Image (cartoon, rainbow, N blue to C red; front, side, top):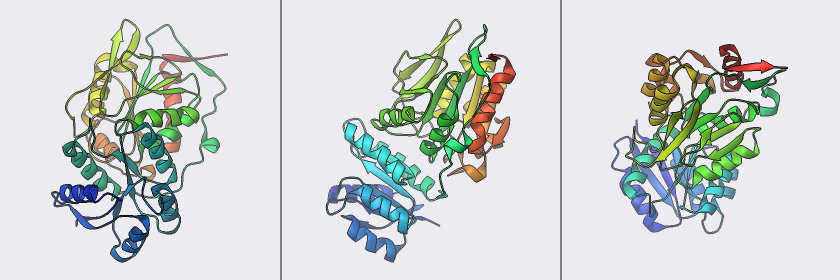
Length: 351
């Protein structure tokens, strides 16, 4: 059965491009389009689409106001599409807070129609599988430990996380619950260019960790989480006992840039048994083989369980190929990470 899509955008050109590109996929049916939220409201009721694509800046009512009302009265999986501007990045973060399941960029100078089509099709298929649910109470479930984590004299631990659809919310839960002294984290969230910086800034506001969009050469150190920039791959590297990242352009890997596969394979190579891998919610198989390489090289790998996933795709495949040591609910994963750090002796408790 095909996924029924309604396109909501004030630009006739964008509506035409989206309709043409999406219609190339036999698993997607564009059932209609709307130039503003008022027309969209009527078409949602009459056409009952499975997924909406929604522009942010539109006449009569802005997309965020419409999205909030939609989620209150007629919850529907919605992908917000914004322009390649800093403002668009901030608006995208607000859209995620308002209930959007994903965000992406319109075609622009560094983002072609072809790239847009590939990504939008994947996001629509993932959104059709989304389970809309209530957010986790982070404060209630925050990891509390009597000891602080301190680095031992051995090589640092590295925590590598991959996520896609639903990952923006899942990452906020995980990072908000981890203590400040947690070992360095490297993260790939499937998200377009210009949005990842705003996303990292938003996570930074809700975490004891320092969270930032990665820059080539950034060190991976305790208390810091690096988010791979949109439209670039991120690789872990090592110099002696110190870890750092390289950020590079390159072809799509598993239809993604950044790709979890790219990050995880580099973590397997350069961190080996000093790594903890975490696979969070998302559609597809990106990162599964890289996580398997991590496990072969001694890493301890965790996957989010089906009940707490927005889309149970990436964790499911990782488990299926034998790459996972432990599956658990989203709210339990931060505690599991801390427990593993303390158990290995790489991070050790001190008074």
